[in-house]
Image (cartoon, rainbow, N blue to C red):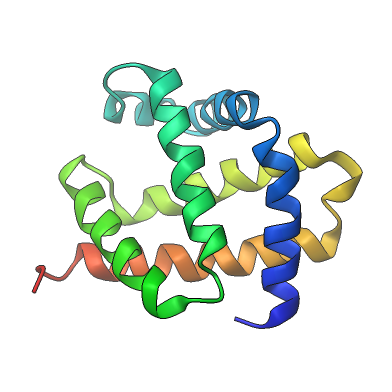
Length: 138
């Protein structure tokens, strides 16, 4: 991951953190509009789920310069998500909902460059999670 990608993602995430509860609610609205069937995967309090989502994204974003620490976290997350019924195809829907949410939340600050950086970072993260979902834990 190059420095520009990291700066774009980390810099824009600071703005999202300031509106985390609203961003989480918007994300799930976007996700369920894109694929209503995904609602069945979520049990329990969606406000708490949204807080966990924002925290996990924050952890991933903060560790972009420390890939050796980030990859095992993502692998564990990918293995855990498969037990919830998450399928490989869901990652693309989640990515699209995330990008839509970022665009809505960041407005003009979600420049084409920032969008491309988020797309690349999400792609790398989801690739690690998908790969881990198909391998047993060591």
